[in-house]
Length: 303
Image (tube, rainbow, N blue to C red; front, top):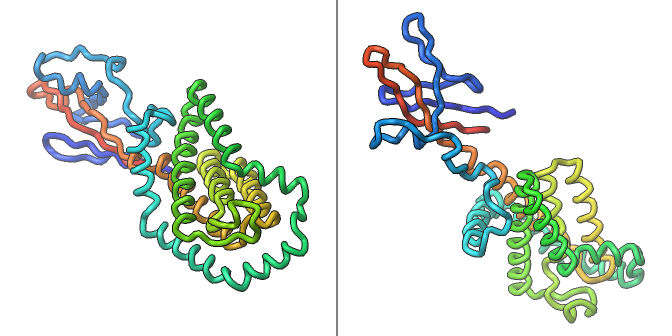
């Protein structure tokens, strides 16, 4: 449930307003309504008059940055990715990643070896279905689909779709870079030599990228779209084990990292500091003795 806390900051003090209630000033038996005026109107002290209208005030970015395109340009995109990275590397998230890494290390020897032996005797149990599903996790498939979908969203201009694609672009970029970084540092072996010469197995890029996409979809569109996306990501991840391209630990850590990145970026875009809003505030003729209006700033926080 959303709770909005609104407070008026006035020249003579502060007053809290109930959620959804329009502020009013009571002077004797007269109740004066509050007038909301454009910020250019309230602070136009030089002219002494107010000629600005709402249409003259440019819209600012909302909590999820709905005035910003998924591809705003290299500079703004890098700045946005920096904010996303700060949200990903919180103490709680690092603890989660540490636990996932510990679990992967724990099964690296025994369990991974058992899975390798099982898949060696019966490889590709999913057959052509597994090949087709695994193909959906290839970067040469996911990136063009993401670019095409983002282009369509920008042409359509729907704010919900634009918001989700901003999260997808950022999360996919960060998950991909993070996966490549860990691969380069660890350079573990794969069950077979069919992929990358049997090198750079940990973690699975297919698992990380697929669960990143699924987590973003789940956060933006809810479980009705998120659960099928998670199921598909799980099938893609399993196909990597079935085809002996990855160990179980590669897939588990990749899925955990991808989910964490996707969820963190999507929640940051949806519920970040943009929940704090500063709005111009004006109460008409509050000081009736001097026939003066009182102006200030109203701030609100949505939980």
